[in-house]
Image (cartoon, rainbow, N blue to C red):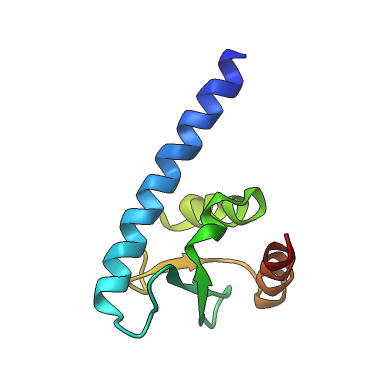
Length: 100
């Protein structure tokens, strides 16, 4: 029980840091609608996607964010959230989120 509680707290802390980074990125990108955030996806060539903020609560999207944190920390070179995975994996993951 204590381990699960600790996991929930750590997840909330990570999400809070990403929300702060997303707000910072949104303030510099006025073309991102309210309720969405811009993310940059790709291993070498980065492509910009605009996704709903609600994705931050989804476990599969959190797994992508954890991978991003491991690689970049919270200092993203693109000025927004950068997810270091193949574009097709990102599209597959997020397409499943939009139906759930």
